[in-house]
Amino acid sequence: MKKEATRAEVFAAIESERRYQDKVWPEGAPSVGDSILLVEEYALKARAAWATEAAPEMEALDIMRKIAGIAVRCMEVHGAPQRAGFEVEAG
Image 1 (cartoon, rainbow, N blue to C red):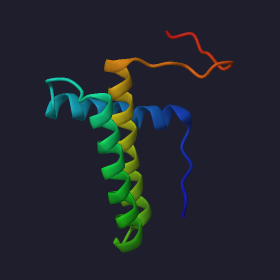
Image 2: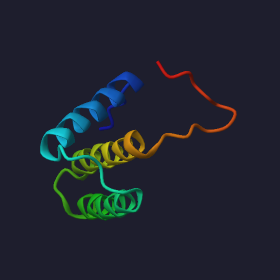
Image 3: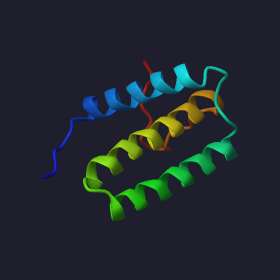
């Protein structure tokens, strides 16, 4: 059964992942290219989990949180360009 989440809940999950990443890898983020490779690797893991795990949705969502954290960390360190026409004031 699908459980929807609010945007605030989604961002809280990503923040929890970022806190974990900062604890495990305090030296900073990998390069943009290395981050892309990490996202690709975890996407493959999510696909494999979806196909083989007993609870594929939960396992895949756990990995999606990791992917989001990797992407956020990359943009925190290397820049975060906004989508033109949909800019939001940071605050």
